[in-house]
Image 1: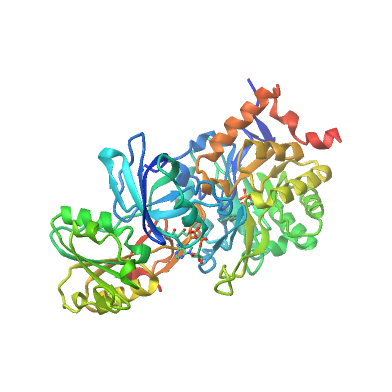
Image 2: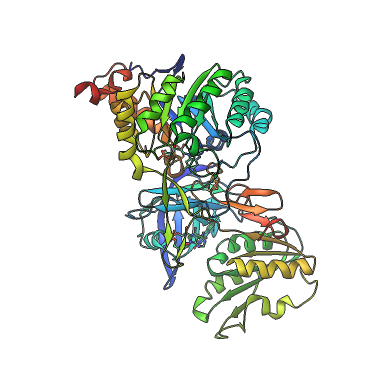
Length: 254
Length: 305
Ligand SMILES: Cc1cc2nc3c(=O)[nH]c(=O)nc-3n(C[C@H](O)[C@H](O)[C@H](O)COP(=O)(O)OP(=O)(O)OC[C@H]3O[C@@H](n4cnc5c(N)ncnc54)[C@H](O)[C@@H]3O)c2cc1C
Ligand SMILES: Cc1cc2nc3c(=O)[nH]c(=O)nc-3n(C[C@H](O)[C@H](O)[C@H](O)COP(=O)(O)O)c2cc1C
Ligand code: FES
């Protein structure tokens, strides 16, 4: 069931100039969260923002009433949110949206770029639990943008690309040798900039590999009430907040 | 015990707090957060004769203390509503109103007729004020002759409670309030959104696909209050006030300005349980101010001046 719930900030961890991870804990039991689902978070003490902000659940631990968010600063909301201190209270509406399809005992590839890596950690951990061979491909502009590699390594084999070649393979994610291995994967999951998701999706389509993308359309309500977040699909306009954020690549009209 | 009942036409609302069209889906979207049976009423999404896909993305821009939307009446049409949605929501123990929109007079009439056959829909809200569609919508709400033509035509076929929703995008809103009253509407509701633009300076482009959109939220509250107050001085039929109501105090302000009931819109996005808090807040306000019947505060600032 969807909830409006207060969480305390356990930790606000800066990763680099414009990325941070918030670890949150509630005094009360928390809801089940599936990989791909998101929260609508109230931005505290902001004089300029008005609406909540949608953020994917990066990780969660039901036994400790904890969940974490991985955030990239792009504007006022994500900036103010990054200034919270330990023990501050944050108000969440969650869990929202659909979820990634979880397969068993398959070879799977997760491709993330920018803040798009946020939903992939929980996904990787669940996929590993159900006996999949997990490969995680993370792309960034420079080495400084490749974050949380060690954490991802707990749940699969991590490979990387950077545009300038300062770490991993030089180029875009689509240039990585792991993607040249024909028919190796049974399922591909991707989240990140549209151009990246499109390139990965086209690649998968050509090889007849199932591919799911997680979209980040701007939202007002997050619960299917306002119809502001729509995405054109082969089934007409769908709400990213309730019919998504996860879509089959072939359903999306780009 | 405080009396929170108010009347719109012959309908008794259990309290004055209702939800605004386009901001509350059909109601079930909020079942996890509120008890819909406790609301004074629910105004469902704008409904048209035919299916409409609405406008292209982006449809939303956040603005200071508010937001612009350009949804453009996306809905699956009145037949879909009658067959698929109505059976699910008819059993809520509250009044459900359908927000009827259209591009031609005939569309409004046919949609109203279809909804008129539904036993558990006691009224409609005639939306002649949507700023986000190319044809019709606001065109009916900004021309006196078009407004009176469409209200007259719908009134002829629709025998239950008829509420006309007015556009703030006019020079003198009281003219339209007067027309609605003359044409036999039981009530008027106001305001719909104010026409606005948001521009992305970095990209040097408008934010919305439609360039213009409708402004809602606290940013429009003073304008809405002024218009409710003006209309309350002009017509005798009840007024349903809205525009930026975020809490019980805002709702009280609308009632003091002359609204018999209120609708809560954009606030539902920020706190999906806000309507329940507003109902409780109205009750507490009355107790604190020793008011036995909430109707006693309706239009109080007009009576006092
Ligand atoms: C389902 C979903 C899950 C998301 N998960 C995450 C996450 O886990 N981590 C994370 O960092 N971000 C995530 N996002 C994106 C995040 O919601 C936005 O970056 C955030 O709302 C921007 O708020 P702001 O106030 O900082 O920026 P604003 O001031 O609102 O905008 C600043 C600039 O960023 C652009 N922008 C705003 N929203 C988006 C968006 N959704 N996508 C791309 N550009 C945008 C605007 O056009 C503007 O140019 C997610 C979005 C969705 C819809
Ligand atoms: C996303 C959105 C969609 C809306 N759709 C409709 C609609 O279909 N019909 C209508 O009459 N008003 C519509 N409105 C206007 C609201 O019902 C209300 O008049 C307006 O938002 C002002 O109230 P508020 O400030 O409390 O939101 C919409 C408003 C928003 C924000
Ligand atoms: S954000 Fe309101 S419907 Fe998706």
